Structure formats: C-alpha cells, structure tokens
Image (cartoon, rainbow, N blue to C red; front, side):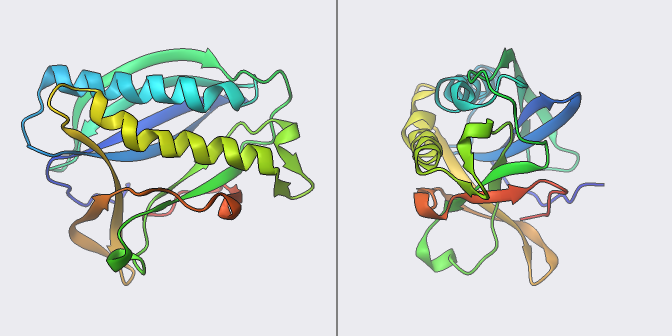
Length: 208
C-alpha cells in the first residue's frame, strides 16, 4: 500500500502515461491558498495541469509515449478523495524511438532554503527520445527544454482559477526514515539548476 501522509488543503495530481503497454506515472502537489476550492476549481486544476503538460513537455517526448490522463485527488484524509480528471490521449511530438521505460530525466524541485536538507518529491520524465541523450548524459538542449517547462508551472498554476488560489508545492512525506504526521510542504521555487537535470531510473518510486 502506498504511503499516506495528510496534506490539508493539498491536492495530488497524477500524470499518467502509457509506454510500451505499461502505465507510467508522475505526481505533482498543489495547494489551495484559501481552502475554498470546489468542483469547478478542481476541474480547472486538472485541466490546467493537462494543458501545461501538453504545451510544455509532451511535444518534446517520443511519439512512443501517450499522455493518457491527469487525475487530481484531495489529500487531507485517508483514503484520498477523487476531485477531478482530464483525459488527454495524445502522443509525444518527436518521431523517434523512446528510451526504455525505466530510463527517464530526473528533475528535482527547489523549495525555501530553510527546508533544503529535507527529502522532497521530484519528477522522473519518461519517454525521452533517443536524440535527447548523448551516451549517458541528457543533452544541453533537452535540459533547457525541461527546465523551462517546469519553470513555466510556477506562473501557470495561479491562472487556472479565478482568485489566484492554486500554488505548485513541493512536499516531503518522510522524516528520518519515518512517515511524517502531516506533510511538510512549501511553495515550489521551480526546477533545480538545469545542469543538475540528469538521467534517472524509474524502477520504483520512493516516498519523498
């Protein structure tokens, strides 16, 4: 069973892909600044994430990968409560073979400096086209693409609903190898320095 740590007024977005017949997933965290979001705002959040991804990341992934849907769950209580979903069903925009499903770009996120030593979530971007990797290194051009894509999320999230309620957050579920009683979460400052975007392996997802 996946680790659950509550995040009051927090929402987990599942970005679900299909690659070589297998589901591959990333997750992002978002915070409702005023605790007043409802059905309309939930759908706007889900739709906004899907639009951000299809504009900023999917065009640069291999055509072998399909972005299937985005799903948003409220994360205040266990079990999490379904909030909204957005079907996408679009393939990547690069007509090249994909690297295998366990090879991905590891994009770490940045949050306030007083939390720097805490372990936090990141994304492993799947579906890298062959040209994105030179030997065992992601090319400088592709690092730029991923950096700019995630940086765009900072300003995009507040525009998705009237009232400027949504913020992209970075979250930590574990402290000293034990689950926290409540999520440690703070507003994302963006992706890590582009030079630190590296290849990673998606063999399993560890709690953050």
